Length: 105
Image (tube, rainbow, N blue to C red; front, side, top):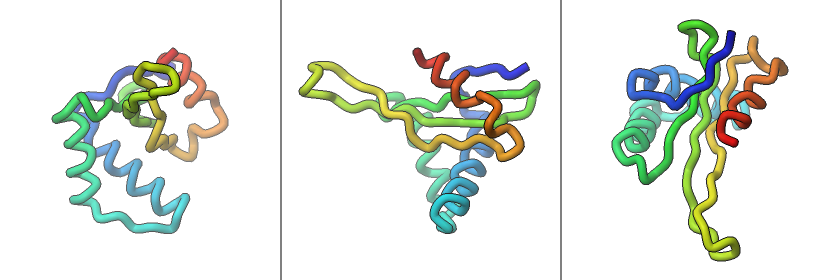
């Protein structure tokens, strides 16, 4: 059974690995792992930047996404942006993102 929850700092290695894989897969871009690690750490160290959501299948981390915040003058409120979504290939097309999105709703 897949469980959706807010990520914790112990999830950092998997989130970094997901970001490296996503950049390579979608843009053929090899990111600098220490820089990505620094970026992920920054989110955990400063909740004002956003937060990560993860999906687990048992103890296996299978997906992550990042929520960042932006002030909208059009709506006079803060809006959330979904960024950095990655789902392990073997779990794609199985509704993992839908479950994550529903959790956010």
